[in-house]
Length: 368
Image 1 (cartoon, rainbow, N blue to C red):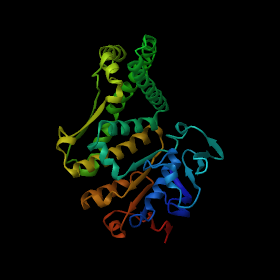
Image 2: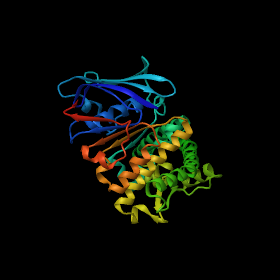
Image 3: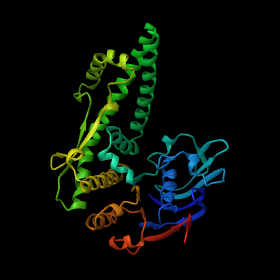
Image 4: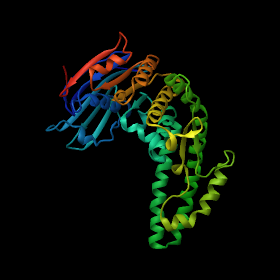
């Protein structure tokens, strides 16, 4: 996949910006607060319908305006035109693909695959289990619509079941307990499928991590990834063991009014040379592992979808030493199109930019 061009209207600092891109590396250079990350943000909107920085859509609109619009031409399996339009008056965002409105974001996810590397990625290795689950679920969802739908159904079940637990605690109504049994069955069915998908995914994905890490550090360290399931279920008896554990924890759930059993409590453990990264890893090892995860994501999606994702890399080279930065930039030549933000032109000198790269200098929401 490649992004051919984009047009931004009233998008943060960009009142009216048009950019045509290289199919290889695209360096977006500018000081802090000049609008370079907004370009990555706009591409992310086109590929997912969502905001890269998890900002509210209303916060993206240029000051004093009442809408923003992002238009992009994309080459995937076919050439497509995508438009994201948000209106502050109605507080509604609309997504159009080749002139037709798309009402469900799930219909877009995976169609235009993206891999992002941002400063917030430190949460994947250093944050909570929820941050690691979010990363893994996003990778699987981009390659499996089935998994995405199961995940959506599971999260809906969690919300309904949590609300019901609170009602039971307040009202002590036995009829509500019958409803709880129904939602518990749904939790087991959807949750079991999520666990199975995650086990299968990790068994395949760990090889991609090793390959990426070896390319970045030339085989000096041995990375690994392990799925840590809360229930430690036997893969062949998941539903039975899941339901047994749910029954065992029932009184605890009623007392605490929350869902205590299921894949929403699972974690993924990252290690280097058999030492847990979160406990023993250096800052350099954390950053390298985070980048390796994203390169692993790229090649995993490429193999599963037979489409090369687009890489969005936001201001990561400033945090790396010259050795790691050079190896990453060299590795980028294997992936196709990438968008890389930098705060200083001088940083390009320590990277392998290549002759086909485009360089954009952004200042005040304009290309200068």
